[in-house]
Image 1 (cartoon, each protein chain N blue to C red):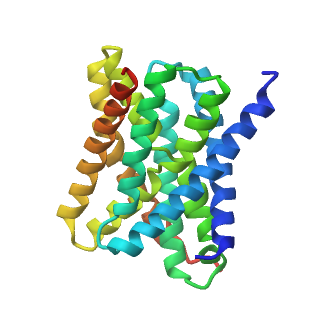
Image 2 (cartoon, each protein chain N blue to C red; image 1 turned 120 degrees about the vertical axis):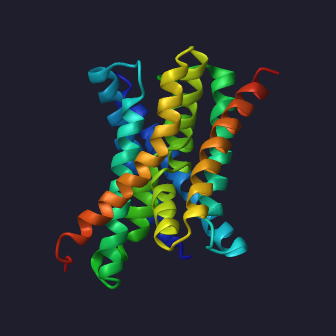
Image 3 (cartoon, rainbow over the protein chains, first blue to last red; image 1 turned 180 degrees about the horizontal axis):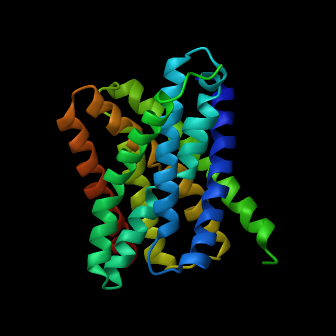
Length: 131
Length: 125
């Protein structure tokens, strides 16, 4: 793995993390702090994007998108989505006594994200391949 | 929001370092254990959850502290990932390995919650 790939991943992850942080701040302002909407949103959107990117790149292995994989996939999507915050929030909901919400969030999130990746893939295949 | 720029830079720096760490560990695990099962992502997410739980136990929920921004929103947020997990689970499923896909989902969830709780518990001393 080249040093350039690592730099691209670092840059993409920094951008993804800042965007995730912005989404989580905005969601706290707009939707309150009772439920971790921000993290759920970034994880679902990031999963949809990675599904779309993987499917699009697989159809054009030498295209621009395939070239930008480290920046976009391992970098941006990886930094934008987060598992540690999801775990923290699930534990936090449980500790606050919101057992129902903790279970719903904990058990529902991951299948929803896999479904979202599948939707992203379907979206890529429903359009003609990009140049 | 006087510290807005500082906050963004702390998250960006942590996110960059976390992402590079995840990329290095995922590559090393794929090299060592093969690509039949996404061990790298599972390992990254479990270890990130342990650290996040420990930080929660030590510092509590403190969304604006510099350390929290750098370490949790940045470093651990960038280090752990759900997008790779989703794609890898979907790929297992589409390769006809439904049991491995389900195992990955259950293992990620249970290990993640257990490691976070363990980290939090360790911090209580």
